[in-house]
Image (cartoon, rainbow, N blue to C red; front, side, top):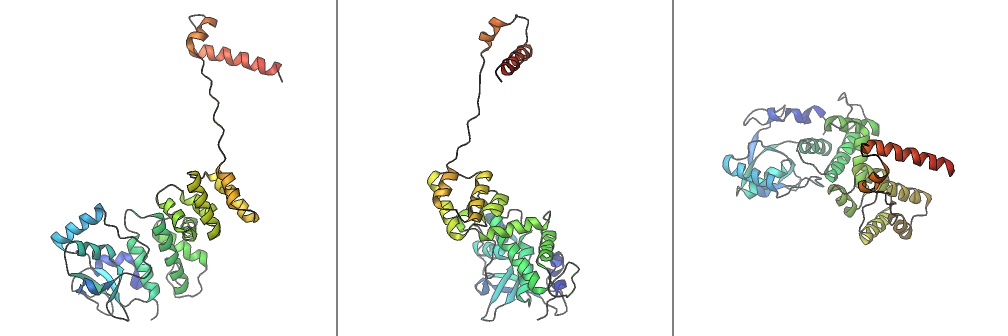
Length: 303
């Protein structure tokens, strides 16, 4: 099937969700499908969590049904693959429903990925790991599809241009944000979990840790757990450099992560002790000026 980017623009979903309405040249229609015939999208990057938001979704479905039909595509082995609507299916299950309204569309793999990613990125709360794998899937689909920003059918889109398109569609500031998120897909699960838990910054994990080999990352998380520390940006930068030099070992990581910042020097001058050297009319600011003036004189004499 030839790709057609115009068929998959998410902005047109509201028009598609009119029951019984024609939705394109093939006049696809909304239909009720048993939940048992609906299967998750292959390598779906977005989690379906039984959280408070899901509880509210299930309550809404139990009360009013599924208001916005999901988008699915036929599976060669039977049934349908959910392209957009995994949460609606789970909500329907929790609400005790047996069927769900869907819009069946004949989408090729690239079209399906783009619809799946764009529809899920509209959610309010998305984990960094979800963005990471979703962005990668969409970039790969755009590159394979040959889609350009102007929606021409030209082939061979440069990688950078595909990332710019993903950034534009997702509301990211630049393609570099997309590149950073995609770099997170190189992290082993325990490190990626720390990013999701906001213990490691996306930028630091992408710029410094994602370039480490899988074995180096495994050693890195082991040393972190052993020392019970979260590395600073400067420590991660050092570890990255050791890796580039080919000298990174678990022992080196241990040494770097064991580094302690020098404790700041604090000197407390008690007011009652200072008062014996100054007139009673002196303010705190006047005392400070005299003290620092004397310290400068002392410093000059001892240079």
